[in-house]
Image (cartoon, rainbow, N blue to C red; front, side, top):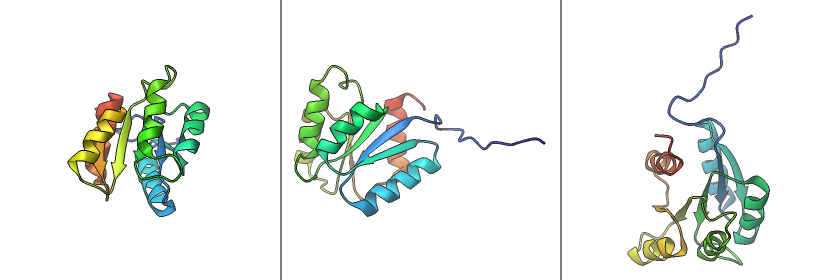
Length: 135
């Protein structure tokens, strides 16, 4: 019996992405779309859980919502970038605000990229691939 496995051709199978998103609908939609493209996706609902998930899961990349309860995405990113064990993990800021000041604050906090919501999946995948070196 011959088994045929479909593997995505433009995505590195198994690369893990931590999605930090407090809206369950957004988190579910984004994780399903990323999994369909061959990525492993883990979700954290806030900044504190994101820090714990990074230590446990060691993701290859983080999608960080900026507006989070308790600890916002900027503070979580600053903490990740201050830690030698996690500072090299690329972070893409996600926010519904398209203000230049939010983009500047995200980059100042240590984010590698900035993406507005609703997410343009093709553009986001392009940024993910660029940051992971999988283009």
